[in-house]
Structure formats: structure tokens, C-alpha cells
Length: 305
Image (cartoon, rainbow, N blue to C red; front, top):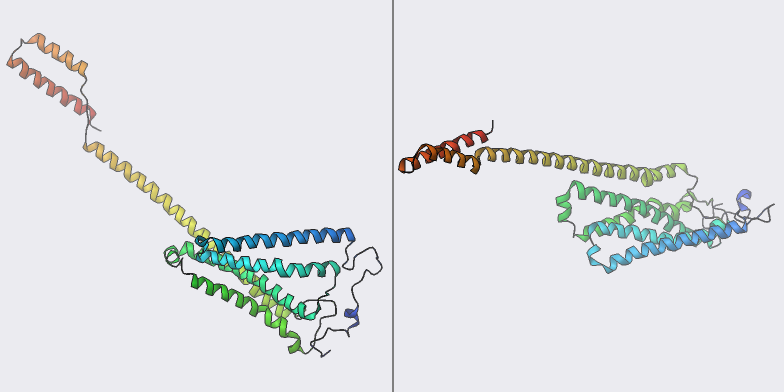
């Protein structure tokens, strides 16, 4: 049991190879032939979709220079992690899950586990990084715009994500059996040596799942609250500016009184004056006086109360 570099063959419960058992119509993995074919087709489509989708994201980032902003670098990092899942992790997992047996040796098993845990953890950390970037762009807009073209900072954060993702599981996958001086991994199986150590799994899960979940929830909730406050403030400013415009308009209207003279009424008054007085300087003077009186009366009518 102390041969840490070998498959464990001494446990009779773990020594047996996967087989169809009493059900010869079933596949070694426990699936019938039609179900196995269906699952293989669906997983192949999943691999194709994953690879093509993320490859297009990476290609667009390489071709279009305008996309090379600080925030888009984090999406590139996420696309690289997901591309590795489709290129390396899922293709090796398909025969393992369909046949129920790992047939690629212990060395490739170790590599597959390291890459699988690495890229999955890196994807989670990249989502946190993207949420943090959106949080900064909303709550610290001026500083964020000033640093938008600084890609060196973005690349440094990308490297930190991959380093943290590797340190979380990589050393444990590689060195666990040597530290414990035994291997619990049976022949034909491939999983991490700490698979049944709930102390390590609890700590790793808190770092990989609970902490990112709380962080992403906090960032997105803060973004929502900040946008909500800005919307309410903008609405209040629009309402107050509208009221100020109305007050200014009323003040201008009060300061400038515009009135019009009705020609019909003026003509009637003029005819009356002509009937009472003959033409001459006195008549013209009386006409002007009556005209001014009439203008004064009309202007008084138009004054606001």
C-alpha cells in the first residue's frame, strides 16, 4: 500500500474491473448501446459547440484591436479556460463515463485532473474578476475610464487568476499520495486522492464556490443599487429643472405684457369722435388722447391678477 506511484490493487473492493455483470446487454459503463450512442453524440456536439464558440471569441479579440480593452481581457481569459475544457477535459471524460473505466494510464490521469480542476476553478475566478471590473466601471467611473487602456494591469490580474486556481488544487492532486504515503486510487479509476477527505473538500469548496458566490452577489447588488440611485437622482434633477423653467417663463411673461388693439373698436370710437367734432388740430389732439386711453384700458385688462 506504500507504493504511492502505483495503482492500488490490494483492496478487493476496488480491484474488480468494471464489467457488464449479470446484464450482458448493458455497456460496461452501465448504459445500453443505444443510450451510449446517444450520450456520445450529445457530448460530441457539446465539445464542438464549446470549442467553436470560445475559439470565435478569441479570434475576434485577436483580429479586432478595438476590443482590446481592460474589461475585454477578462472575457478573453474566460474564453481560454472554457476552450481548454472543450479541447482537453471533456474529450477524455467521454470514454471514461461511457465505459466506466479509465484506460489512459496514471500519468495522463494526473494531468487530466490537474487541468480539469485548474480550468474549472479559473472559470469561476474569471467570473468574479469580470463582476469586479463591472463594479469598478459603475462605482468608480472616472478612475476606470482613465485606466481603460492600461492592459498591463489586466494581464497581471489574469495571471493571478490562473496562479490562484492552480494553487488551490494542483499541489494537492500531484503530491497528496506522496504526503499520505499511500494511494487510494484503484486500477481503472481516475479521481483525486483527496476525494474522500472532507476537511480539504470543505476548505476548497469555501474558496472555490462560497467566496465567489458571495463576491459576485455583492458586486452585482452594488451595481444595481448604484444605477438605481443615479436613475432616481436624474429623474429628480429633470423634474426640478422643469419646474425652474416654468417659473422663469412665468416671470418673463409678467415682466413683458403684450397687448393688441382691436381695429374694429378703434374705428367705432374714431367715427364717434368725427361725428362730435369737425376736422382740425383740436380734433386730431382729441383723437390721440382717446387712442391712448383706449390702449391704457386694454393693457389693464391683460395684466395678470
